[in-house]
Each structure stands twice: as C-alpha cells, then as structure tokens.
Image (tube, rainbow over the protein chains, first blue to last red):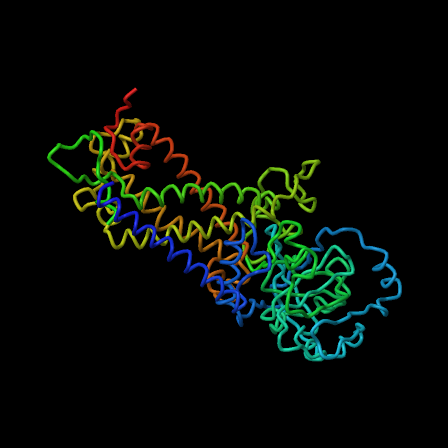
Length: 252
Length: 255
C-alpha cells in the first residue's frame, strides 16, 4: 500500500467517524427541538425528517396564503369518500343537535362540546386553498373557531406536544404538533362560503389546516386528545396516514 | 483537488513521461453525475405515479374536476374522481411515490449543492463548461449544429473537451432547467409558500406551478434521451468509461 493511499484511507476513516458522530448529535438536537416526525423510521425517514425539520424551522409562525373573495372557487369539490357510517347517519337525522366533540388527554378540564357551544365562541373566517396530494385544489371561505381557542378553554398542560384528532369514521384519525395546533389558521370549521359546512366537505365539523394537504383536514371530527407522545396511538406512527403508506407531515 | 487525485496505473494514451494525468472527468463530477442519474430516475418514476392520480393540468391558483383543464393526458387515473373515459381505476401508488419523490429531491438538491460548490472552487464551470471567446460565434455554432444534424462522429479532441452545443446544453440544464424544476416543486408546497408566498404568486398560482413543473420535467426527459443517444453515437464504451473511471477513450470502439 502506497503512502498516498494509506493517507487517503485514514482521512476517509476520520471523515466517516466524524460524519457518523455528527449525525448522531444532529439527531439528538433535532429530537429535542421537535424536528423529528413520528414516521421517521424506515427507508423514507431521512427525507421525511429533512422536510419536516426544515419546514418547521422556516414556517413555525408563517401564515397560509389567504385569497380575495373573487378567487373563491364557484363549485367546491366534495372528494370521494367511504360511505357514511350509522353513527354519522343517526346524528345527522337529529339535525346534528347531538354532535359532540370530546376533548381529553393532557388538559386541565376535559370536556364535551356541542356544535352550539363551539359556535358561541368567537367565530373566525379565512379564505384559503384546500389542496389535495393528488394535485387538484379549490379555494373556499371557511368559518369556525380556532383550535387554539378550544385548547385554551380546556387548558393544555405545558408538556403537551401533539393534538390527535379523530373522525366519526374510526379509520380516519390524524395528529399535528403544537406549532400547527396553536396556529391562528388552524380551525375547527363548521361553515363554508357563508353556509353550514356540507357533509361532502366534512360537515358538521372538520379540522382545517391550510398549511398542509387536504388529507390532514379530517372530516367529521368527534374527538381531540392532547398528548406528549404519539406512541400509544395506532401503530405509533402519528396517524392513520403513515399506516396507509402516506407521510404524517403533509406541508409539501 | 479531485482533478489530480487520479493516478493511472495502466497503459494510457498520454506520454509515459507524464506521471500525473488529469482525468477526463474529476472524481467529484463522476460521483455527482451518477447520484444525479439515480435521483432523476427515482423522481421520474415517482413523478409519473403522482401524475396518474390526477392527469389534468390547469393554469392559475386552483383547478379540479369541476373546472376546465388547460389540457388532459389521455391515460387512466388512480382515482375514481377523475373522469378519464377509461372504465377502470388504477391502483393508488401515491404514498410511496410521494415519499420517494421528496427523498430523491433532497438527495438531488444536496448533490447539486456539493457539485455547485466544487465547480465554483475548482473552476470546473469556467474551464469545462463556459464556452471560450473564440468558440462563441455563429459560425462555430452553425458548424456544430450541421455536424450534429448529419450525425457526424465527434473528433478525437472531443473525447477531452465539450463542444459548443454540449456546453450550451449542459449550462441550460444546470442553470435553467434544474433551478426551475426545484422552484416549481417548492411552489406547490403549502408549507413552503406560507413562508415565501412570492415563490408561487410569481408563477401565477399553485396550479401554474404544477403545470410548469410538468413541462420542465418533460424538457429534462428530452435532454436525458438526447444525452443517451449522443453517448451511443460518440462511442458508448469510451464515454461510459470516461464517466465511470475518468479515463478518456479515443472515441473508437475497441470491438
């Protein structure tokens, strides 16, 4: 072995060791600052972590684009979805008077909220885009109560890290970090374009998360859980999406 | 740096008195070339899969099955929502396609960054890609174009340096097509544009960004096809050898 190749080998060895140690340190720092998504394991973990971490660093407080009234889509799309279950149809038959949103987990005052109660809170509106991972999109005006308001009412504990939310369809549940949960544009939406939220668009209650793709804006919300760990939910990947092969973070 | 790292240990075309020979392509160019190739194929396959879930294109901010498309691609879709005219729906492949698309995009962007820093520091762009003053004339350009149109085999010297058309094409791919495809990709990200809204409004809206992303991808695929055809015309083995081992060939096939 020549001197040169030995020197190159040593240099490469040192560089590789430094690289591995550096990656380890970076992973610990990222974990501490909440930059690692729950679906970081497996072959797509590196890409997912890079996307989530860099978007969190860039977008923690940024606002989704809002549009003018003239840009509202004339016909908002009601995406295809599985048939409504009996639980939904029962409450629908009663005019949604018995629709309840339960809030539990790391909160001071767990509770149940009727639509009437939610509508009694200060109502907010936003004209934002709903974009699907498939590539299509529409703009609508959404009316609702900011999720942060409801979280204030129940009083979240300081070590809360995620909000998990569930549809009346048990197959459909998602979660978001506190940056998204407390974001001023994250709504519990009950209205659209000046009317009640139609069933096809998630009525009577839908989560609206305009900085992420449509599949994070779960329809027919009945339960919120505040938690410091996503391990106990489903397969521990954060939501139903990664279990079905889709990324937990959908800001891209 | 890497320019001089290669030391020939076998017979080479240069005089025996020379101890060190600059390789045709430096190690960094070769490594980043093949990583880029791999990423591009991954992005292409996953991109096509994502496209299949909504093979319709629009202009402006919004577009969906209830609005008039700019154009449609006449293929079946992986979503029942899309009226394609086909009586069947393809299986949904978007989950892994999106994961792969973004992972490959990260690898490509980081590789491109490494390549760009290297190229600036080593003078690779200046020396190997920027056309020389003497070369930059309509006459040279015309000769090059007519040589290409007549499928004339490249001269011996072209085993060692790029011709004018090659330089212009590579510069266009590096400084126009790749930046555009990255920009239009990011302009579709709801999270990214919340921090940098001008990146999407400048393009005319999110659906315009998607449409431009598609056309730039088509341009990149066309480049890839021509690139591969040219390699076959110039001598597949010698050009592949140059990009894999760094050794320049004579341009003639030895078999």
